[in-house]
Length: 224
Ligand code: 5RP
Image 1 (tube, protein in one colour):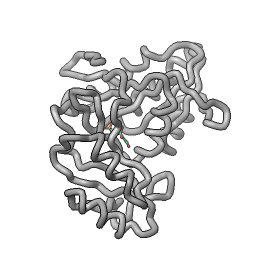
Image 2: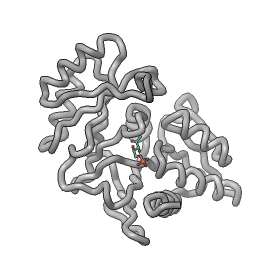
Image 3: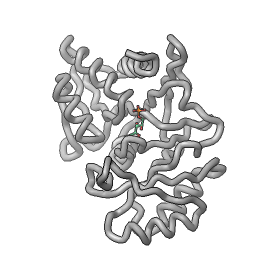
Image 4: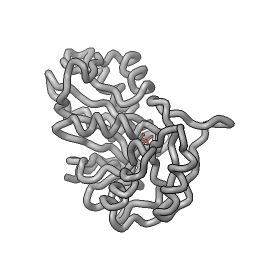
């Protein structure tokens, strides 16, 4: 395992310490979350009573593989905790998410949780968001028009692809990766994007994270 993967494993496993018996837990998406779900499965085998709501089909598969019981919003509308990754975290704990394309479900699950814990390696901490192109989920119908309106806000949106094909989210939508550069006012940008017809959700998570579990070399720090 390379150093980056070791860091992901370290923070993913450390975050499971936030999970208590009886909790309903939102399960994020991405390669760091993989380790969290795996560790959670080990805790379940030791007797921990939890149920998870997954944010992607891939995470649901991991949960089944590692033995984490799943539930859904038809049975539970409030979660005790969500643990998820991020692509960038700024000093106010605002986030860019959606590198893995699961941002819409991730935001729904994060919004349903009393606490949002984010797991990242130290390279994802930034003073200002925007070096990572902002993922925006859009409706396939008329995506070209939506992209034109987004471009007018100051970027050149790129339609995400998967090999030769257009990337399609678990919700059947497209992702536009939007390189805005330094985002001075994330809340205003989020609102401006949400005002565009065809935009489903943006990867800006403003004021949602409560705690960041950060991996630095061989230790874990918590920022809140
Ligand atoms: C998926 C996400 C992921 O949490 C984010 O991309 C981080 O992923 P990784 O842990 O693989 O770096 O937002 O939509």
